[in-house]
Figure (tube, helix red, strand yellow):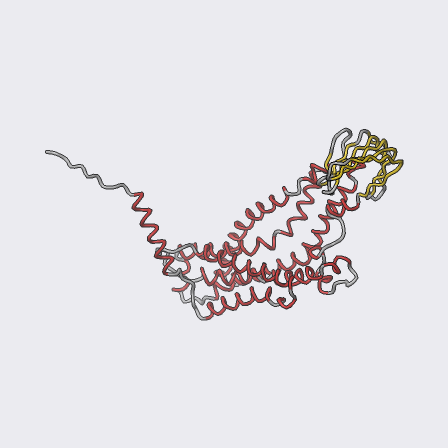
Length: 391
C-alpha cells in the first residue's frame, strides 16, 4: 500500500472509531439498563451484571458499525477536500484508485468482521445471556429472597417468606399470583421447599384463596401443594432456543423435530437470510460514501454537508433491508430481496464511480437553502437608523 493510501486509511479509521464508540456506548447503555432488574430482583452482584452486559454487546455492533463507517468516510474526505488535499492529489495526476482503494479495503474488512460477529459470536452470546438470567431466577426463592420482604418474581407474581432454613426449607410462605386475568390467587403455607432444579415449590399445611372476576372468593385448605416455577424460568430466559439463538449450521439445516422450529419455521428462514445479507452493508455504505464525498469540489459552494446525504441514503437502504427480511418471514418467494437491496445499491454506486459521475446537491435544495439563509440574515441584521443630525 502506498504512503498516501495508508494516510487516507488511517484518517478514515480514526474517524470511524470516533463515530462508533460514542454511539455504541449510548445504545449499549440503554440496552443494559433495560436489564437492571437482574440485580434488583434477584440480588445478583455487579460482576454478574457486567457479564450480562458483555453478552449484549455483540448484538449491537453489526447494526451500528455500517453507519459509523459512513460518518468516518464522508467526514474524512470532506475535510481533505476543504483542506485542498483532494485537489492537490488530482492536480498531481494521481488516479482515483488512491482514494478508492483504502476505503474499499476498510469496507471489506468491516464486512468480514460483521459476518463473524453476526454468525459466530452473537448467537452464543444470546444463549449465554438467557441461561445466566434463567439460572439467577431459578435459585431466587431458595437463596436470594430476603426474609419478611415482599419480592417480585415476575410480572404479577410476588413472594414473601418468614424464615429460611438449610436444605431449601422455607417457613411462613405467602404467595400472590395475579398473572391470570380471570382470577387472583393468594397462597399461605406454614412450610415449603424448593426442589434441586429450582422449577417446583412444594407448600405444606396451608390454604389458597381464589378470587374470580365476578368477585366471588373460594378458600381451599391443603396438606401439600406443588407450585410450578418452570414457566417462570422459561419466560426469564431459559430454554427453548429461538431462531436468533441458533448457530448458522442449524439455520442451514434445521432439525425438523425441534418443537420451536415446528411452530414457526418462517422465523428460521427469515433469520438465515438476515445473517447472510447483513454483512454486505459495510461494503455498500462505503461505495455510497465514495460517490457522495469522493470527488473534488469547491468548499465555497453552498450545499448540505455530504454526510447528511450519505446517512440519509444509508438509512433508506437499511430500512429497505429490514422490510425485505420481514417479507421473507411472510413468504419464501421473497428470499432474494434481502440480498438484492445491498447488491443493487452497490452496483449502482460502482457504475457511478466507474463512469466518473458524482453526486451533486439538487438545484431546488440549493435554492431553498439560499432563500432560507438570506431570510434569516435579513431578520438578524439590524435595520439602518432613519434619524438625521442637525446643524
